[in-house]
Length: 261
Image (cartoon, rainbow, N blue to C red; front, top):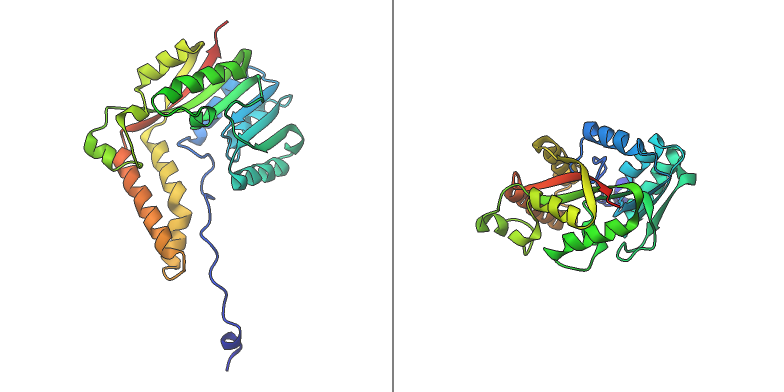
């Protein structure tokens, strides 16, 4: 009898989580650099990141604006822990807090710069389509006069067909998003002027969606008999099918918004 017989190898590690992602969204290094440069030029003293995840964009703003302090709000414990580790590693721990709490009705603010990238749903309990206008009104109350809001918000690049909607997330509806023009109109109605409008390109979406699943796909290929293999395979295949359904239809706008006096 060998030692391996008496001490069987432990089960393989759990699937890794999002280690290939720098940002939790379709955002390239090039675009991120331009955004950080533009936002840091406004010399914010305070930064608030709504639905921050691990707060990579906020940390980069703090590096570019050395007098600023930041607060990131999210409900994901793992992401917040990753953000705290990153802040520590980059010498920013004394200038940033990662807070585990809901952003709806948050008391953090007003701030000179508010980041809300892919997280407008965290600011309201309303369902689409009313949640976008409500989130914009909440953002107007969270930003200082003379400050900036960076809103990353989904929009339809073209109206989705019913068959396309059926392949997207559960309950997907044409009312879930506006077109880009309507999104800008809602921002103006909420008390903003759009300083800069840009949208994620196809390459950014492919980089994001590939990186979102890459670690787990590699893990699954090497652990087909793991106790969690079946559920992991189903989740990966479902997400890929959803991506193929909204690919080229769902867009993400990056709006730099100035509060109107």
